Figure (cartoon, rainbow, N blue to C red):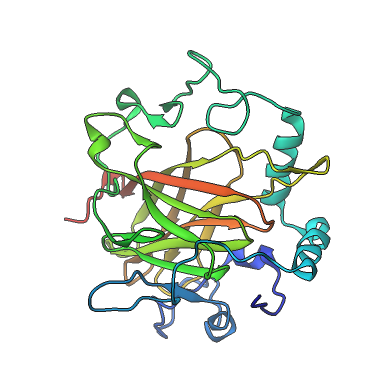
Length: 303
């Protein structure tokens, strides 16, 4: 199994510079900037196979290779130093108790009305909860099974690129008549840090808000009486060449929103990241849908 040098997982959650943003221009305003060369060794682009491109990394990630005993012990021994979002996800699962019912998960399924929250019934986002003009509803994908990306988005991984799957999802998504589209699914059963990203251009120095719905499957995560649920979703926003700002979503079993507001830089370049982090070898399934963007309070659609 390919191993990488140890790098604090917390750092990966707070700042990220990706290969799709390699500019060297300075950013004004004193916002933090990091040297990309320090991250390049940990970054793998995930490129779907097409008729013109063999894709990267080579092959498909399924079936997942069995990790070695040494690797398993390394992951288990890292539990005590995991960052706050991982510990929040863990505490939530412990508090729920054994064999708890879930809206979307491994336990006994909740029925109506317990399966509803403010945005969805079960795994389906309700039309009545839709809140405006959407920037991305994940209608168009390219690639092949386990290596599919939405049009105009790029895929990446800091860890687990050989095993993580990126795919379109037809079950957990919008309600009809919007269900001709999909949601974005990121999954794996070996530790991974992976996601998708897209760059947009906005008015320089404007106020930009991004909102996305996310769903983490409540996978149970118990081994020999120990709960192993430590995975979470994250929304990142990067302005020009400044470090990305992140908000975390550690809650499992239902559709919930992630939202963050930033001030655009002098170039007006905004990069959006939808990322999933799983530090344990668990059956993690995460979904994103209905990305909304506002620029100075006005919906942004890219047109």
